[in-house]
Image (cartoon, rainbow, N blue to C red; front, side, top):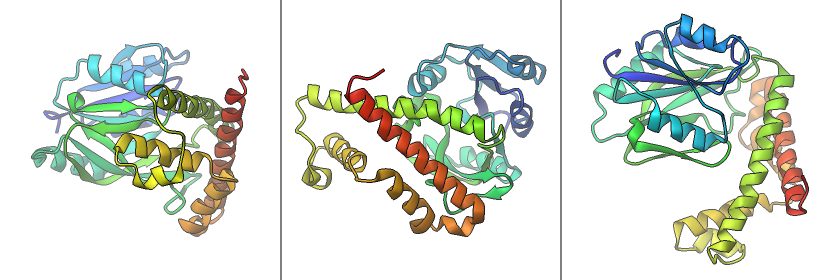
Amino acid sequence: MKEMISVLILTKNEQSDLPGCLESVAWSDDVHVFDSYSTDDTVKIAEAAGARVTQRVFDNWAAHQNWGLANLPFKYPWVFYLDADERVTPELIQGLRRAVETAGENVAFRVQRRDFMYGTWLKHVQASPFYMRLFRPEKMRYERLVNPISIADGPVGQARGYLDHFPFSKGMSHWFDRHNKYSTLEAMQIVENRRAHADSGGQPFSIRAAFFEKDFHARRFHQKELFYKMPMRPLVKFCVLYFLKRGFLDGSAGFTYATIASIYEYLIVLKTKELRRGGA
C-alpha cells in the first residue's frame, strides 16, 4: 500500500493525540501533517515521526481543506484524510488496500467511523457513521465553513473496516470549547446561505419548495431552511438521536451525547438569531 496511498492529517495543538494517530498510519511512507500554526509540540512530534509538515493560517474548514488538496505535494494518486483524534484500525488498512486495488471508476471511498465516549462505542446515537475519507485529491472538494460537505467528482465506493474516533480524548471542556466555535461558524453559514439565496433571486422559503422544487440547489436550500425553522429544534435533535436512532441502547454515554448534541444545536439557534439582529 505504500506505493498507492498518501496520508493527510489536519492539526492545531494536537500533541496529545497526534502520536497515536501517526502510529496508526505508519503503513504509509508519505504522511502529510497540515498544521494551523500549533503553539505546542505538534510540529516536533510530526517531524520526529518522519511526516512532512506544511503550515497555513486557518480561515474556514472548506477553504483550508481545499487549499491542502490543491497545494500539498502528495506522492501517490490516492489520499486518505483523518484528524489527530482518529485511528486507522488494522481491518481498515486492509480495506483501503483493497479499495484502491479494485477502484475501477470510483474516485473516492466512504469509510465507517466509530465514535467513542470514555470507552463506549456510540453505535446508535451517532448521527452518521459514514465519511468520505479516501479519494483522488483532484476529484474532491469541500463546501461549508464548518462540518464541510465532501463532494466527489465521480462514483463513490465504500472501504471495509473501521476508523476509530475519540472526540473526548481531551476532556469535555475541550469538546465544548471547540463546539462553541463551531456553532458560531454554523450560524454564519446559515445567514450566508440565506443572503446568497436572496441575492440570486430565489423565492422565499416554502415547505412546498422543500419537496417539489425542480432545481436541486434550490430544493436543498428549502430543505435546510425547513430544518432550521423547526420549532424546538434542539429538543427535536435530542429525540431523534436518543429515541429514533435508539441512542438509549448506548447507555449513559448515549444519553450524555444526545444531550450535549442538543445543547450544540441550541447554541446555533441562539447565534443565528443574534446575527440576524446584527449582533456581534
